[in-house]
Length: 342
Image 1 (tube, helix red, strand yellow):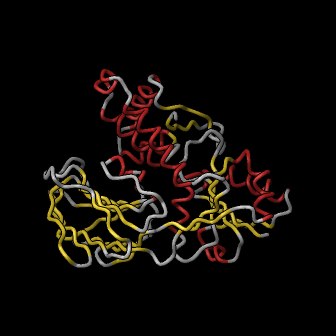
Image 2 (cartoon, one colour):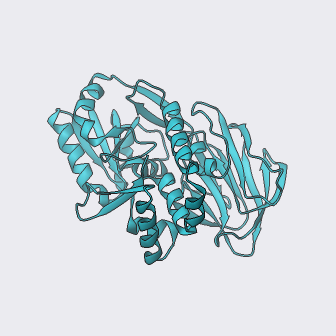
């Protein structure tokens, strides 16, 4: 059996080394997949993506063709939603992998064009927002070249069923089972209170056109990569779906939704006094951790664009109220990482 290991960046080197050592102890042929050799994706039996959810999203952004099935590996006690295997359980899982004792799920990806230029495919969602928060953006939604709405809102999100439990859900979109053959379109904080999320067949071509705002607008891919946009966003089903290894007996889609429902219940059950006293910066950090999984303080500063001192104070607020927990990173014992307490 031949397995490739993919890592999002140098921060995952320690985790990558641990995975490699464990697999080789089980007489599994292992190769490291770097940015320059993604052709390995079609030359191996499986790909292990180190780094939890972040590693999985990074992998499926970079590998734009077909790929061997992928299994996400996360650090112990992580709260990732896409990665399935705790690194502590890798040795026992390796025996099942060698026997072929697993299932493979195919999930939808979105092919994305920004102003006619093809960019990275996405697994969760594509969003268009003004580069300055809380600034209205005018846009037209077209489905198969037919105008559906002309809207003014904070932005618009196009999500896959996998992404329906991420940013889309936070913006009021529906939870959709992973096997559904649909896209979800959500207008964020529209000035038209009759505007409702749309669920459309994934064989359609979606376009966000006539984009106007007081500031320039950006396309955000899976909460990470950003591209300036001037004219039009085009989204359609990607030619090659993401293929996941499933080791668990229960439905991965149901398990994912259960996790998200529990998270939503915990956050909604905050007493009114706690909601009123929570700074907007702390709410932003909560959403960022929900969306991207465990992050360091530096990562949170980069993702949220908040000042370092504001991030530090917000984390202290969230830790004190039990919404976030802190642990030591396996990749670097000197670094602390933060994640939702669920």
